[in-house]
Image (tube, rainbow, N blue to C red; front, side, top):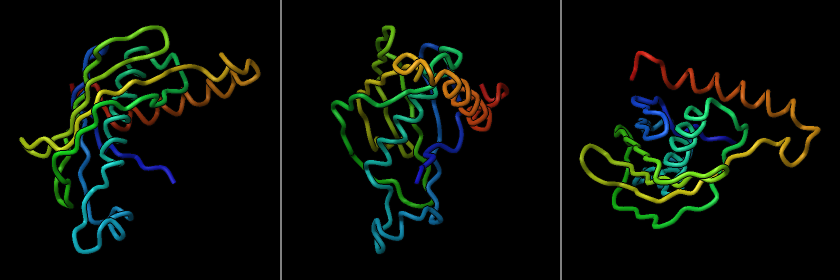
Length: 159
């Protein structure tokens, strides 16, 4: 199962930062189990939201050059609040440093003005063909799919 943890991207400044929104609804299946009497967004999915926003920033900043963007490290992860149904998690990520394959970002999530989650993330990016030359067509397909998903999350009129 894949969890799309962002509803929309509201701001994007290539090579710098991104702001995205996740609106938590009781319709989220995992809330039936986490926790039935006190439904809250699991911490791991808050972290996934930070990662997904960061990955979109990287993809767009490099014009979708790499098919694969993976979370390599999550450092200094801090949870300081809950996200409950009916609330919006606003995710911000800022690029701190970058080289040819790794990007380090500082990412935060807030509900209103209240900090909820923060982390320093290290993301790795590559193409499948870098490691398996016969997979270059897969890279093209993945990049195309990522462009389509990005266009659903962000329109140029938004920022």
